[in-house]
Image 1 (cartoon, rainbow, N blue to C red):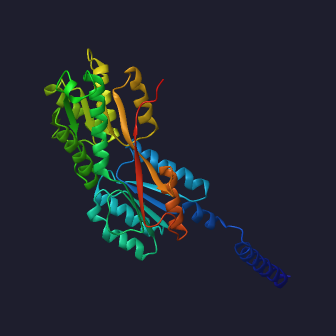
Image 2 (image 1 turned 90 degrees about the vertical axis):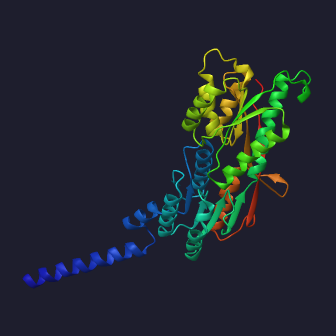
Length: 339
């Protein structure tokens, strides 16, 4: 009897092991397989600051597009710290992502870590300043964006303070505050585009803030300090739209200020930014326009920026260069919609 029980017990154990092996080999995912799939990251997206409205909007739109195709995107915010960004990219390499998208904090610090990723078979898209090492480079002319920001401001000055729309018809010599950001190559190029264009125009008193800004909170503080010495300013130009939002918040809170006689212009866009600009039609905002990066022209047709970015990354995941190794983004002046 004991021998029979032992035989039955051994037979049960063998059958259980065979069943387990068949389950694992049947093509049905085991719990371990499911866990690995849940933790899989296809695309690592490394950016300086996701609280920036433009960056936050772009990365989230790309993530949504990827999810529709079953690709996973993990966004890493380096808080504008180059060392932290490199550490985050190291982590993506260890995770064996298929592709990396990088908006560099410091382009000069990127080549070695990009090469390391490429040595592991990871394809790399760089957006912004040319790092010299990449699989796909996606950028635009930042100096020209600065020029166009200044042009929008000059146009508004002439429409508001000139009797005939010319510099000679100006009834005042307008004071213009520029809040710059020069801590990156892109930031410096765009800021200098603003300043150089104003100086070439030569019909305004230009006051450049020595304190720089890249966030809304920083810009609010900068503007508060600048206003103590330049409360007669009628135009403020900022490096990016997040700063412009901070300036707008400060100016809209001032009592007794004629909101129709002051304006803010900047670069970058997102849905909240455009909503704020649209409110300027009724002077419920003084943020009156921005330069938006709208995406590249492919075969003569404009491709939406998030779509173009995602298509390039999806192609890299599949080992393809959808648009080639260099993509040049187009920009557009964004004014308030007429109500």
